[in-house]
Length: 131
Length: 143
View 1: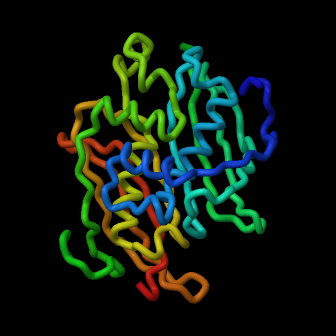
View 2: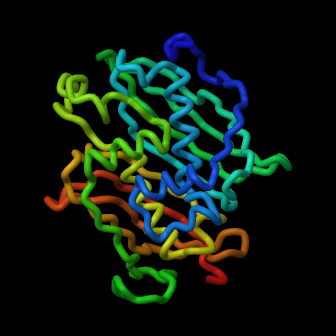
C-alpha cells in the first residue's frame, strides 16, 4: 500500500488495538509523565500515538525511503481507556494531495470500544518528502 | 491565578502549571519503542543528517504528550473525558533541548449547557521559540 496510490476517502481496514498496563507504563516512562497512573488508565495521548504510528508504518513511511514530518494534530477524548481494553481503530484518508514536490495527507481516526462507542477521535496532517 | 495555585483553571487569565523537561535521545528511543514509531528521522543519525533538520529530532507526539500531561494535571477528571485540542507543530525539538509547556484560559464558552474553557496551549524552547501552538477545549463544570 503506497500513499501516493490512495484516493481521498480511502478507508483503511479496521484494526484492533490493546494497550496493556505494561505498554501504558512504558509510554508514561518514555514521555516522562510521573503523574500518570498507567495501571489504572492509559495516558490519553498514548492511544492517539499508537494509532498514528500504525498508519505511518502500514504505508511504509517509516522505512527511511521518505522523510515524514508531522504538521498538525487534532484530538478529541470522550472517555479514558483502561489498560487491556480492546479498541478498534477506524481510519480514513481524509485528504491526499501533492504540492510542490511534497505530499500532504490527512488521516482521520476513530477509536471505538467493544460497544461501538467512540472513546477518542483524531486528525493528523503529515507531509511526506522524498528523501 | 498564577502557576502553582490549585484551583481548576476555569476563568480567563487562569494559567496552567507548566511541564518543563529536557528531551534526551534516550527518551526519544524509548518513545519510539513505546509508541511504535521508528521513523529514522528520530533514530538514525545518518538519515537525519540528510534531512533539512540536519540531525535527529524528537517525535512531535512526544512533545505533545507534555501538553496532554499539563492538561491532565489541570483537569484530572475532564481532560480525558470531553477534552479536545488542535495544534500545529511549528518547529523541531532536538535531543538535548529544554522545553516548557504553556497554557492559559482565554475564554469560557457555553456549549450544550456546559461551560467549556478555551485554553491557549503550546510548547516553547528556552530561546522563546514556539515548537507547538494551538488551542484546547475542556468542560469545566463540576471540576
